[in-house]
Length: 71
Image (cartoon, rainbow, N blue to C red):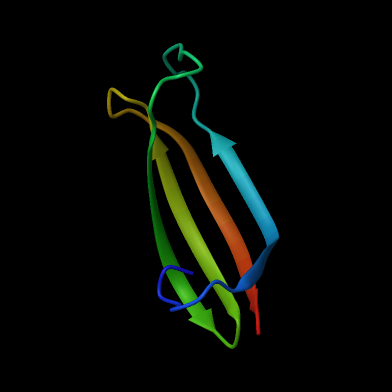
């Protein structure tokens, strides 16, 4: 989506989020880090994987998502 010159409609087709346990307690206003990698993208579909870290740099979740772009 970041590569388009203008906004495009998109939608998540499938999304899983796996939380890592054990983890440190977090506050509602704590910052998290997020890094996504697009594994494959073609013909309006993209398959991504992402990691989520807490403010101390500990991995707290793994995400997998299939996204489609319209138009």
